[in-house]
Length: 204
Ligand code: AP5
Image: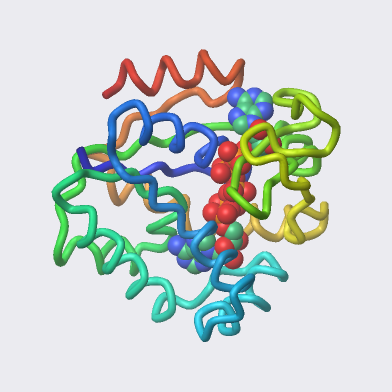
């Protein structure tokens, strides 16, 4: 199974992709997680990506495409869910040259809901688990349920950066819904996590 999860920032791509990858025994390839890890480790990719991410802008295609190709080829047999990639038509055209995607899950959430989701998000720097102060609070204070490390607020989850990310999404990424129209299933991303998950599973 080769899947793409598409949707605006905060629509729940990462939250749902992790569960789907686990339940279907496929790889979870999150471009955002890969880039944040590269920044943390001070790699060349991290140095190139950092200022774009901080500003809420897309990292250039030439930086992310090669990372994506390697991750896709590595997991081609096992299957995968791509989370946060492709994010431009040029990226989608790039992967069309070497992989056939089975299904695109478009998680639809209105802008009015997104800001509260992102300003309330808590992320684990160590294992990447994601929580929310209201909809998915960590069990013990500010510590990760999974690995007990401290949770933090992502630097790009400030209100002004969230708005820029959404504008970039509208301009650069939303055209992918049309690009993949024959393979896309639209999921209502508003509602309890379990309900959204059930809709995604039904569509698969
Ligand atoms: P990335 O990390 O991919 O950010 P994003 O696409 O903006 O998506 P988010 O991670 O913010 O949200 P999500 O949809 O995964 O939601 P989540 O599940 O966490 O990318 C970051 C940056 O990296 C980009 O801005 C760009 O600079 C760069 N980048 C990455 N990929 C790139 C590419 N291909 N090309 C170029 N640059 C790239 O949920 C959000 C919150 O809501 C959580 O707190 C969660 O608990 C909560 N929540 C989830 N579902 C629900 C629900 N149903 N009800 C209530 N709360 C919910």
